[in-house]
Image (cartoon, rainbow, N blue to C red):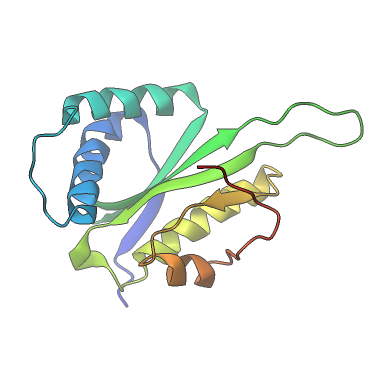
Length: 154
């Protein structure tokens, strides 16, 4: 495991790289299917920039030197206020990706650790994720567990 990397919070200026990595991530999910996308990487870049600027979405990147080689996003889902407890947001974890050549070096674990630290420091008591089969072991190592409380309608 190498220690020549660092994790930092992403900013809107990172949007071009984050959009390109998002496209690489989804192409990998689709096993390299290079069919015509329904939206451009430029549209994704704009979407990411707007969300990071709004503060309702947060993201962290892992850098090896000056190269961004992974990311994870956190969407803050507001809860309806209630009279007897603070309605801290729920965190929706998504778009977790590490470039293949940097996997198994601790980069993904470092991203999730940073995200969890931020969630704990802001009083967020629930993080949810819909993991891929491939990512389940990593999420479990980072402290995520299956929930008997969540229901889903499709």
